[in-house]
Image 1: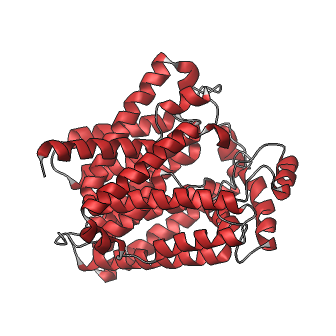
Image 2: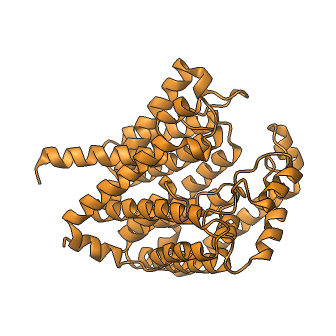
Image 3: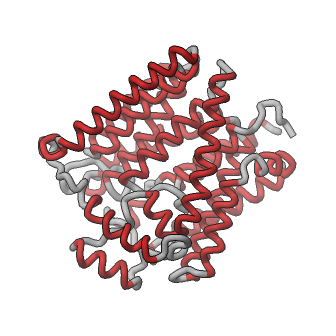
Length: 406
């Protein structure tokens, strides 16, 4: 292919990644406030354009796309469950519309995995996050009423500080992985890691700071510890697990003092107040849920009652696992878990059997991100999100042989 066309395609891919991650348009359209569903016309057009262009680019290399598509059945089965949920959904029209968005998001993830190697994908993500970091700083310095929240925390080009923290927690993990596995331009990658960490700190998102630390340490566990001799690996993993459990226990039992010292409360900004109520609502429809993307609608009487009890407009459960249960029930969680655990175990085996395996190290790091980020936020199975794009592309890429040039 012509070099200019390849370069143009990469630029287009970076632009699409930014659409899924968050663009500078967001704060101007929202004037610093979170978008209501009816105000997203311009963003729907942007997302639809990514779906259509991705389909066109896929058609140009359909043989390899077919091969990549067939590498994992569980993510497509999960999409099928979401689509079927329209038959029992609280609002079938909303479910169908959001399933369309989820399918389009996964089509872009399929294109991403079939067009680029995993290293190339991460480098393109690094370019995108690098651009986003610069724009965030410019917003903070030049348009502070949009880039800085009322409490002084940075939000940059994103609707709120938690999204900035979440995005650059992921950004930091990508830059750190690339810095540790590449020999060229490492100083640029380390600069990206440090910049991401600074943005996370200025977002004042405690969970994002903790997540970035966990993801950084996870690299050494997956890349170093899992490669050790079995007799050494097991005691080391046992020690790490024990220390982690102890630290977690200390954090939970001393939550009042720890969170109080940094201006937080033990309800994690209302999250733990939501969870018991959500569990009760899940128990009403445990197996199939309320339909994908249909539960948190304003005209759902259960949601109205929940928000009145909490005294604030909760947009979701602030827990990805609970939101999947609300949407597609235990059936959906089961399909997700089987696919997740299967890929996790395969990645561990691959790392143990192949000392040069880097693809599966990143898979485990990203899976760790999926788990920890969904404990207090919702990114799992979310349409039009960078997190779900990378979930699809990372799983598919980890199963594609480097020699598969179809």
